[in-house]
Length: 96
Image 1 (cartoon, rainbow, N blue to C red):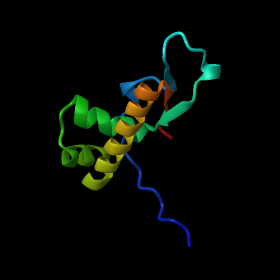
Image 2 (cartoon, rainbow, N blue to C red):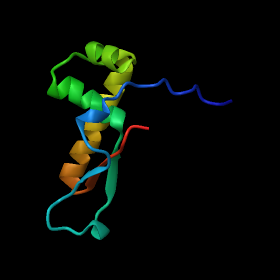
Image 3 (spheres, rainbow, N blue to C red):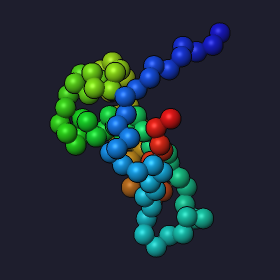
């Protein structure tokens, strides 16, 4: 049985350039593991944490449910904290 098709998400591409990479200073990329932060995770984080919207309001703007925004925010925060604590590079993936 095939999984349900992914619902399109409204992500604002003008918020940042595509393919930004953040890494610890002084460590060559060849020595770093990379975590990828998806565009929809970044959008959910930006709407909820930066702009102060509720998850329901962010869901309306993104065209997804509040529960989906909650999952995106949780996974995005986990990736960002892991990159900071473990010293990984964080790649911001472009919207597809």
